[in-house]
Length: 336
Image (cartoon, rainbow, N blue to C red; front, side, top):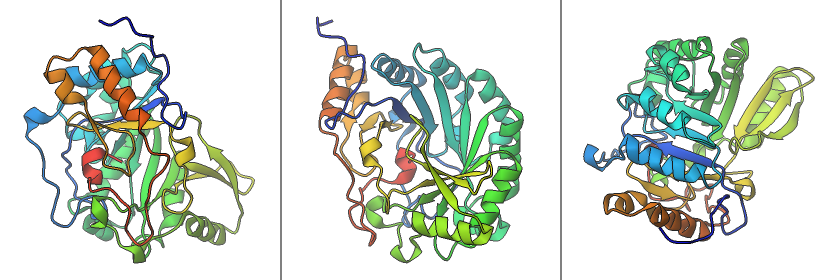
């Protein structure tokens, strides 16, 4: 071990503090959402190339020692990873980690919500783009809306904090925005909408389907007959901007990567299922942490690689409304 100063807070090239690590636990998914998987598919890697639980926990523990306080498990679909609750328990035991969240399609959540909550999971964001069974099945390819709703209700019953995420697409689900909100509000959970981003080199993106954050707000305000009042971001919990409906307690979140950039407040890095550290969703730059571990590198070597990657983290993305400017990587491979 080298006698180096102890890093207590990860900071990137723009002096943004990094306190949030998103961990993809698998590149596999039981759905094939059309906005996530490119038309020619996304090739899965051999299972031996995926990080083991031990490797994931090692990186998370190292990051916790450098100021990371929040973890989010993603995929692919994280619930298809065997013994996921075991991993959650191991991550929850790391000193300094205050919250473990998950993003899921909820297809398998009905039977997993209780053990995941018992293991230490705090919250789950559920992808729910439409409530109409036909379009839902078409959009997700193999999706079952009834199973998803049962999964959401099981997560609520297990005491998890639940939000819904809908990728807002003009001509696909733009007439369901209020229905999605009311579904969530009736259950005491938070609805959120996400602008579609040109991942996969723009292959899964259609500019004609772009629905801006402003258009989402205008649509909701018109249908509700009430103004939306800006609340701002939830500190440390990601990029969504939150809005209050009139004078009520109802809230809605919008992630506006395309039209209202939030790069200046970025506090996140992403670890892929194969151990690649992505300092930005929108760029293909990576640091290979798996290679360091499997070649016998110590924690100093891992720390150096993480800090070096952050030292060149871009100040923002180059997403364009026509689909240009996105990375080659697939959303399914990095987990959003």
